[in-house]
Amino acid sequence: MKWQTAFVLTALATTMPPFAVAADHPSTDPAATEQWQPVPKRVTPGDHPGAPPSDAIVLFDGRNLDAWESVADHSPARWKVRDGVLTVDKALGNIQTRQRFRNYQLHLEWQVPADITGEGQARGNSGLFLASTGPRDAGYELQILDSWNNPTYVNGQAASIYKQTPPLVNAMRPPGAWQTYDVIWTAPVFAANGALTSPAHVTVLHNGVLVQNHTALAGETVYIGKPKYTSYTDAPIKLQAHGDPSQPISFRNIWVRPLD
Image (cartoon, rainbow, N blue to C red; front, side):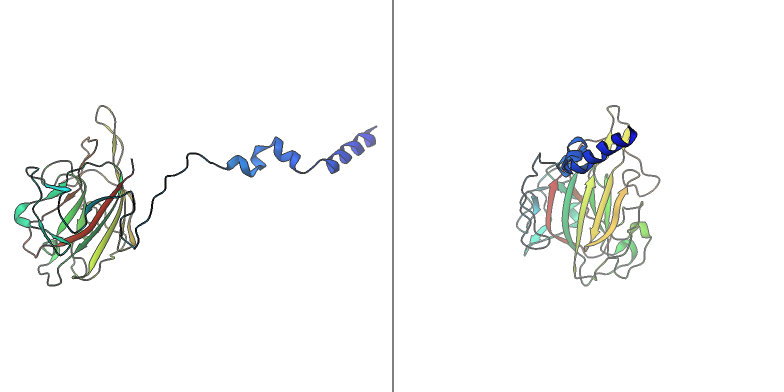
């Protein structure tokens, strides 16, 4: 009888259609791993590199500072706008966005003057504060500086998380050339009691080159001492009017895409 049983099983195996096994085992069915919903919304890319996509919030397009305010007193920002370019006015202090953000993608272009003078931290110094959590220089700073041929401490050069993390490489162009930052900012997460549950992370491309790769921040930027976190929900984006005596830097083409 054993040989008869074996014969019947062999005959069944050779006559069953090959798709019958797949029907009983979803892991072998390609359709089992296909996701159809929800359908991602359509976003139209910019028509050239650096141009804002269709869902971006334009923060500066060369015409006015309507999206910005003074950090000191929340009055309208009064830095200089000329020929499509925004230039820092150091006497007027920092400016920040009127709108508050949490997680986002940001594009920003900046220029160190061709005739820049000074050295170290006193040469084309400014800062992009990814979340401005208070007055003056409170928040999380991505450093802006002339780092073309200007030695300084590496966690203070261009594209560093200031006083925390140096850039992976120095992708600086020479003074007079336009630089780009493309940033993915993931805000820190806090519990109801203010305790940190997830640190902030940032990815940065400087002139198209990866310089911060999902870098975890140790806390807010401090000039002296160790960084620490203070609970917040959302915050403006801030540009720094650094007080060094070198010529002021300029900005253009700033836009943001909230990712919440």
